[in-house]
Image (cartoon, rainbow, N blue to C red):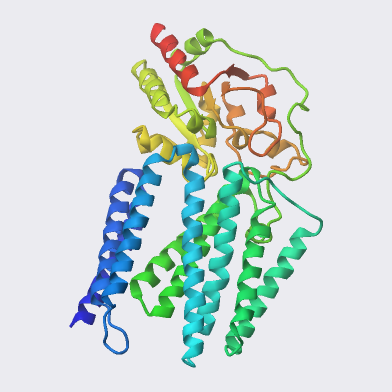
Length: 466
């Protein structure tokens, strides 16, 4: 009876994961979707603790249940405090950190279960166990390096023939995993060496990647963790764990493919770690020839007030300044004057997939006003003024015009097609990809220097005066 109830709980949990993921596809329902999926996970965990029976029909020992709840309380407290204190600009780092913990958990499960099944002479799950170890270890070490790079603690590192070495190492890891699956009686030290090699590959895989390509890596590592979790579901014959892992792995993979398309990169480039903003070629900061023209707050206020259509392009600088609410205030003020206002969102704006969407949703910006790149590009020609707030690489015309640029071929927001372009930045420093932005020297472009939040507040005052 208890096992049947547990199966029903797992079914309910799996359904809530699917419903929650569907609701996450729209900002207006995303918060509820997160709660629905969290409810499913909660009942699945509690059901497992109190209703699970082993092959001898024995429940968890009381002492083990106490240890489980101690771990749950500690993890919950740490998670809640971290989530409440994290800034929006540090959200990508937190995603990488939590994702890495999931990969580490899957890898540890694989090590324990490999040893368990080996001791019992059961080799049927050896392939799944080793796949979980391989993928989980790579996800853990890669996510930790991604965290360090996003947090500014780790810099890009490359060495000759790194792509070739990465491919050879990956092929060696897969071959070693297959060998251990075929010969599961191999002792544990060999398994330990495989795990260590996987950790090294995770480091080598992420280390050379930088610039605007990091969102792709975060998405790919997230899918790795999902696949590793699904392997754990196979090992334990746990439907809810399997369903959750498959959903994370498949959605992460699809998102990775979409991100690669947005970055004009192939998935193979991601796997071998041969792309990134640190690539040579193209203009670097301070090398582009041209004249930079500034615009005063008064002139910017007049231009926006008497425009018919304004497009706002948010970037990481908007998140750093926490200026999304002030930006929304400017939007409302312009609409009161009869100006049509929309937002142009690049798929990799910010430091993680959907960063700008989440940021603007936090400020209650209506979702229909957020245009995807293709839709926005079709409207720039009919736009009177574009305000670029903290974005850089995603609006750089070098991606279309300069074959020597490391971002050449990357689809961008074609803001230069608008009648006027106002770029709000602190300084002329290069963006995350480390190259000069040719947009700054376009005849239609005017620079408005200063902190995004304070500048927007002053701009709101100027618009009110017109």
